[in-house]
Image 1 (cartoon, one colour):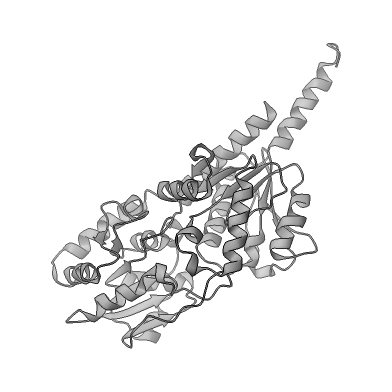
Image 2 (image 1 turned 45 degrees about the horizontal axis):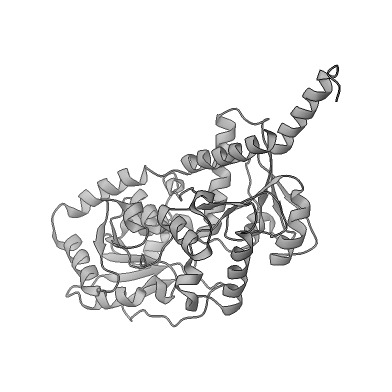
Length: 387
C-alpha cells in the first residue's frame, strides 16, 4: 500500500476492528431442557445484553445467538436489545453444532457456554463447568462420557480459551483435561434473578407444607448428589421434618438410578422458578450434601438469595461459594447433617443469623458482574485480533 492512501489504510483498520467484535453465541442449549448449565447460558447472555446497553456499547458489538431449527419458539430469548437471535441450519444436536454452526459463525469469535463446542472453528471461547465425567463416570451414559472425553482432548490442542465457574472447577478442568490454567478464566454463576421473582405459593398449599417445618434438597438422583446420606440423616432425627426433593428430571446424558428416598419424603421432578422460590422461602433449610463434587453448586446460592439457611458439605466448591454463610457437614457422615438440622430446629437465633449472612453472601454474585467478566474476555480477544 502506498503512503499516499491513508483513507484506504484507515478503512482496513476499521474493518478489522469490526470483524474482531463479531461474536457468535452457540445456541444449541436453547433446544435442551433447562438445568444448571442451560440456566447459566441464558442468564449470562441476558446480563451481557443489559451491560452492553447500560455501558452504551450497542453499536460497538455485533453479537448473534445461532440456534438450530428445532428450538421451539417459546424457548427463544426475548427482550434482547443488542444480541440478535437467529435460527438456521438443516441439522440438529451435535451434528448441527459440529457442521452447521462453524459455517454460520463465519469469522466471528464463537462462544459456547454449556460444555460443548465444535472442533472446526478457529476462534473459540468455551465454558466447561466441571470434570464430573472423569470423577464420577458411572453417573453418565458410556457414549456421553466417550464423546466429551474425546472432545475436550481435541479442543485442548486448539487455540481456544476456556471458562469455568469457580476456582475449584477451573483446577479440576485443568487437572483432568490437560488444559493449562492460564487458558481458563473464572466467570461464576449467580442467583440474583430470583430476587425480583414473584413466588408461586400454590406449590406449598398443594403439598400441605408447613412453614419452616420441612427440609429441602435440590438435584438429581445420582450417587454424586448424595441423597442416600441425606435420607439416613433424616431417619435418625427424633422429630423428623418432611424431606422435599425438587428437580432432577431425566436427561439422556445421565445414567438411570433408583430413587433413594424414603416414605416420608416428597419427590418433585420439574419445578418452576416461581415455585422453587416459594419452596426456598418456607423451608427450614436447604441441605445440599452433594458437594463431594460440584463445580459451583447453584442451589445453595439461590437458597441464600431467598432467605433460606443452607447446610452444605465442606468439600469441592462449597466453601468457596458459601463462605461463612452456611452450616457445614461431612458428605460421608449423615450424623453431621442431622446435627446441623437439629441445631436449626432448636438453637435460638441461629436460623435468623444464617439468613442474614446468606443474603449478604448472595450479593457477592450477580449475573451483571459475571457479564462484565465475559465482556472483558471478549474485549481481550478482539484486541488480540485487531492488533
